[in-house]
Length: 175
Image (cartoon, rainbow, N blue to C red):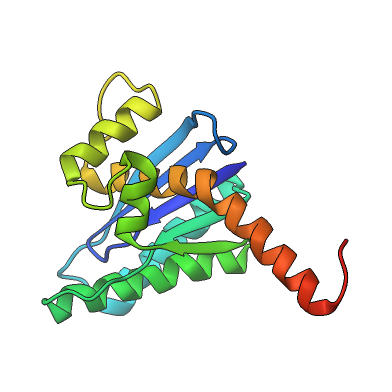
């Protein structure tokens, strides 16, 4: 399974692509950080994110997209920009006809480090180790996007199978 993970941000949007199967180490395909200029108007910034993510989805042809779920922060301005970037990431996956799954930061931390309370340094160290990289992915936005992709490989397949089984049960038959 090839997964494109997105750590949404309006100024810095991390993107990581990995391949793998549940229970096995993942392999790095690529990682990026998409930057937008804070001096630009919001529509221009969102359009740049949309074009960049659409291009990366077309280039890497993932099987699914994993996006960090926006959580409440004290800084409303920051959370609004993150939510807008998140919407663009979800749209890029949906436009390509891909399944899109969102994960909270604590879900990703728990999947990758075993602790939902892991800090940035622990996350980056585990991503580096799990992908067998010679050096940590930089900046942290890229490491976070890779962690999302790893989380989805390890947990998303199970989630999808459970959802499909539940859907079949609701429809009255197994397939």
